[in-house]
Image (tube, rainbow, N blue to C red; front, side):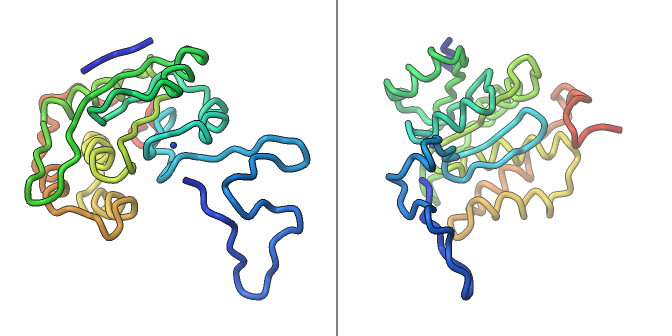
Length: 200
């Protein structure tokens, strides 16, 4: 682990409804009436209180990420973080936790259990919140971390897999789901009560 101190789509009209006249049709438009637009990273979603997930953020997503007031980012990719991203982290005093997990395709998928555990420990420490978990597309590596977090939150497997498949879609991997199913949470610390899904 290395510790250091995001694709929007055009509006598509549904049915006979027309889009508002000034609505931007391309990702190149960054303002409406002089105000900057917030563009979330690919596959962005809230996981729980203070925990978010997404694909790899880029400069078009920085304003959106800034609005979240992030304290930490967990990057699950092994590649060096881009200079623009590092500058964004520095400017906004966001801590980077990097867990380099190689992105492989089946049947050569190797999910390092100890690395997933280390990433989960960062997620579980509320001092790191708000935190964003991301990989390249926000599907497989991120899906495994979130799936294992759901096991800690005592979600049933069918609900965990529904959430995983919502983000992975046609790219869902049996090996990822098998890993989540077999992941042993018994030797991990209890989940903090501040997590919304764990309140009793």
